[in-house]
Image 1 (cartoon, rainbow, N blue to C red):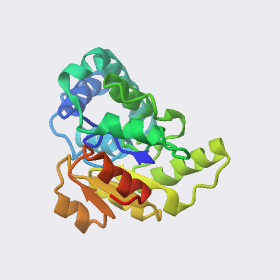
Image 2 (image 1 turned 180 degrees about the vertical axis):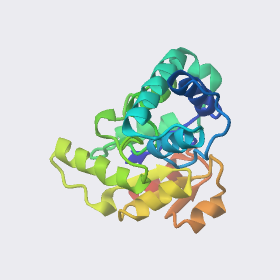
Image 3 (image 1 turned 120 degrees about the vertical axis):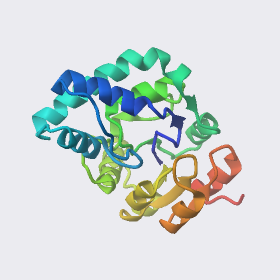
Image 4 (image 1 turned 180 degrees about the horizontal axis):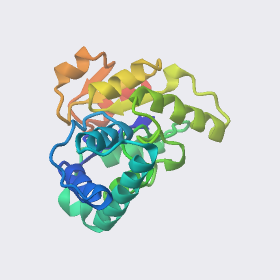
Length: 228
């Protein structure tokens, strides 16, 4: 299982803008004037857009300097994240339920950087059953579908199992999450807990669209193909 984080497991809207404001000021000495759309995009894509739109060349060196600043800001805010956001309905119960299901490996396909992923999930006690070592993260590529085979390949190597595409489930809240699954032959489960409606997620091709993760029986049916 490949989980997205933002607006799938947690709601921390507003944090991204605040963190980029601080990071850009530190790295480039300029004030953040505009933000690209974050939904479903990777940190590599977002960072390059922000640097370019503020007159900074998005070289690998500059991108990585921005990431280091973002990680530091995220770490400084980690103790207060739970006060400034929330775990989304059913998130913890779903993670716990699949941890008890033999053969299920839970990791991430997220636009976030690895370190920030840990900060966000730990703040809401959602980290226990997630294998952060084998996730597909936003530092890898500006193209979200690239993150899926990266995570699957690492999981296969670690567990000595060939996870065929149809055994892989991607859970997210944006059409980009859905496309990342479909482009790799995986199952796309969408939750309408972000900025996209259930209709938009269905139109993107999601195999199942859920209002949120609160109906555990429905989540299990979508992921495991069990009768609801």
